[in-house]
Amino acid sequence: SQQGEEDPQALSIQEGENATMNCSYKTSINNLQWYRQNSGRGLVHLILIRSNEREKHSGRLRVTLDTSKKSSSLLITASRAADTASYFCATVSGNTDKLIFGTGTRLQVFP
Amino acid sequence: EAQVTQNPRYLITVTGKKLTVTCSQNMNHEYMSWYRQDPGLGLRQIYYSMNVEVTDKGDVPEGYKVSRKEKRNFPLILESPSPNQTSLYFCASKETNPYEQYFGPGTRLTVT
Image (cartoon, rainbow over all chains, first blue to last red; front, side, top):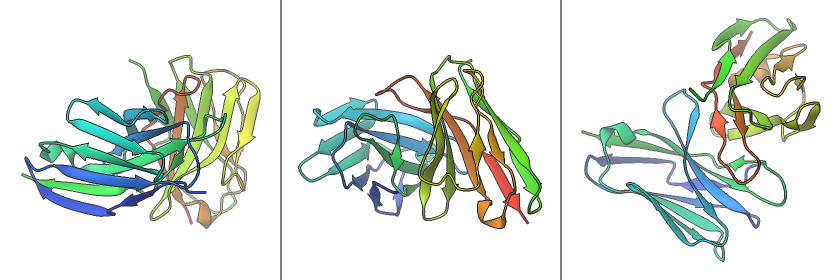
């Protein structure tokens, strides 16, 4: 079952611009995580935000979480060509370790 | 280097021919999991294991088997592969909640 839906499905921007991706989910969560996947490769963890947190930063990444709206956003500031990848949100609910992934946003950053 | 390894990385096989995809992690993680990734469907969990000799079904377990005889290894077994199992498969491991998962590089499987 899929928990998250990401918006937009695809995003194209120029280097230096900011990229914002949104994730909506259906059930209450313990935490929400964002992963990056370069084409055909494994996923790399970017950032984790707990259900009692509203915002978190890591380098050029900023994640927000609104549990009342069951949504999260990932902002990449001052994007680079190397940021070109697919980005997935994934939620953890209940007392399990199970990650439920969204369908992803494909980001293309042009030099 | 901390990592999750999978073998093979690419595999083309025929319907019904049993195959095993190996997964190994060197981080002493208790939790391991298998996912398949299909276009438009994202990643879906096949099986997971909370520890040695403890495995459980994920969302799409039909047609797959797993075993966890050692902490570091978590092989995925397709006893009788079918074309609808053509997919990109990922193994992952992690410490107990709420830590992030570490993913292997993926195995692209084609069943003809």
